[in-house]
Image 1 (cartoon, rainbow, N blue to C red):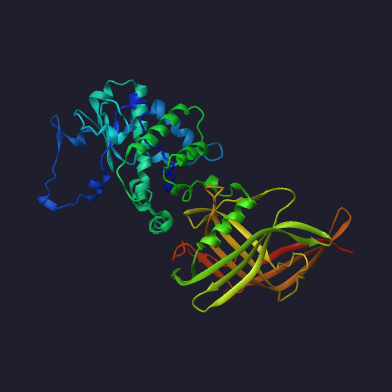
Image 2: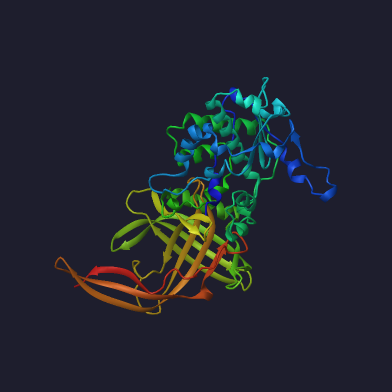
Length: 461
C-alpha cells in the first residue's frame, strides 16, 4: 500500500530568485466553494480559444522531468535493500492536475511570498491543480523548467499537512479501510488551514534549493530530516508502508526513556482508553495509569548486581475500580547507555517501536519456576520518529500463569545443561490494554506468549 509515503514527498519552491515565479491560491476559497447544480455560475472556461482542460499535461513525460527529476526521485523512493518505493514523493507529480496554458496568470502579492523584488508569476498552485504560463515557461532552459516543476512538487507536499489522510489517499488512489479509519484519530488530524505566508514560502524555497543542490548525494533519511526541520507534515514518519522500516534497529538512550515517563506522569497524558470490547474493539472504560521511573541496581546473581530501568506501575480501571500494581525491570548491560528496539507496526498503518518489560518472570533472580506462578509483562508501542522525544501509543499490562514447567537435560562440548521451558496462559481479568484512541486499530491476539517458552539454561550438577 503505497499510501502515506508519498508524504515524504518533495514539496515546492522556487530554486532561487530565477525560480521567481511560483505561488498559491487561498485554499479556503477552494474548500468553501459549493456546488449549486445547473444554476451554478461556474462554467466552461477557455484560454485563447481552447478549453482549460485542453491544456492538461502529464509532467512525468516532459524531457525536463525525465532528465532532472526522475534521478532525484529514484534516490528518494528506492534503495539497495528495498526495490519498492519508500518515499511518498513518488506520488508528488501525479497527485494534482497540471496545465501549461497560453494565458497570463494573475499575480499573487510578493509580500505573501516573502519576495521583495519584482518577479513574474509563472505558476499558480491550488488545492488540486497547478497552472503554468506557457510563454514564460518556454523561455526557460530545460534545467530551470525542472527547478520550477520541483518547486511545485515541494509546495504540494507542504500543503499536505492541511489535508486529512483520507483526502490524501484518495488523491493518490491508494485508500483502504485502515487509512480511512485512522484518518479520524487525533494523532493523524491535519493542521488547521491558513493561507501560506512569507515564512511558509521561505521554507518551501529552502527545501527546493537544498533538494536540487543535494541531488547527487540524496538519501531518504537526510531528506526526511530536512523536511522535519522546515515544518513539513510530521504524520508520515508515523504512518508508512516502507517495508524496510519493519525490524529496523533503533538505539535510544535510557535516560531519554526515563524523561519520557516523567513527562507522561507529571502531565498526566498516558493513553487512557481501556477495556476494549473483543467484538467491536471499542473502549468501554477509562483507565488511570501512573509510573515511577528510575535507573537502579538490581541483583541478578549471588553478589552480582546490574543496572536496570525500573518502572513502578499503578493502573486503575474506572469501570470497576480494579487496581493493578507492579514493578517492571529492563536490564541495562555493561556501560551501554542505549536500549536497542526494533521497528514494528500496529495493524497495517502505524509504525512503532515495541518496548517490553517483565516482572516475576521464572528466569529472574530469586523467582522459582513452578506451576501456578503468576508473572506480568508490560508492553508498549512507542513513536520514535524523534529519538529525543519518544511518545507512547499503546500500553499492554498482562498477567500470565505458568501451568506447566518442563526440564530438559542436554550435553554440549562435554558439559551437561538443564534447560527449563514453561507453558503460560494469559489471565484476561488481570490484564488490560490502553490506547490513545477509543477504538483499537485492528483485532489482535491479546496474548504475547503461548505454547512452549524457553526460560533458562544452567549447568547441571
